[in-house]
Image 1 (cartoon, rainbow, N blue to C red):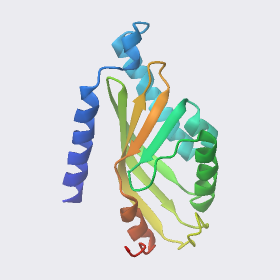
Image 2 (cartoon, helix red, strand yellow; image 1 turned 90 degrees about the vertical axis):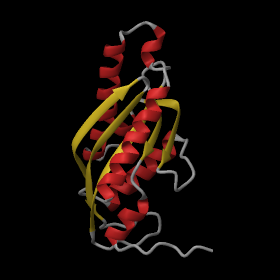
Image 3 (cartoon, rainbow, N blue to C red; image 1 turned 60 degrees about the vertical axis):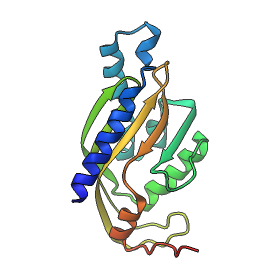
Image 4 (cartoon, one colour; image 1 turned 120 degrees about the horizontal axis):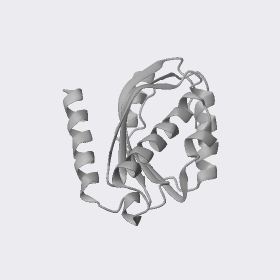
Length: 175
């Protein structure tokens, strides 16, 4: 059932992305096919930065006004230096973090990258004590590109609660 819901979420995000027509090819300097191919590769390169534990590689093609919306469970992150610092702490907490079986699909100014993510929580992260447990999830990352071919925004489909459950991290009580 979870796979069906995840699949439906990915399809909904892809359809929403298809509505826009302001992709980087709109400036006329590239053919649409070339821009889509470039955007797919840029998104995959960003994802590869996670396997290399390199915040600089992840953020290499972020636009200066980049916004990371995550899954929407927390306020958006807008400062690239803060994002890189948080990533560095995240990589230290999950030293075996990896993504694999990545597939990129592009349309207009959006790229959706799906794949499997896994890692073991062995170091403290944001005042959460490590559990030594591992997670494995299927996720979809949605990248939006500006007219210059830079990543303007990122969204993730996977909820943090599913990851916390696998890691044995209790969710805070609602007030």
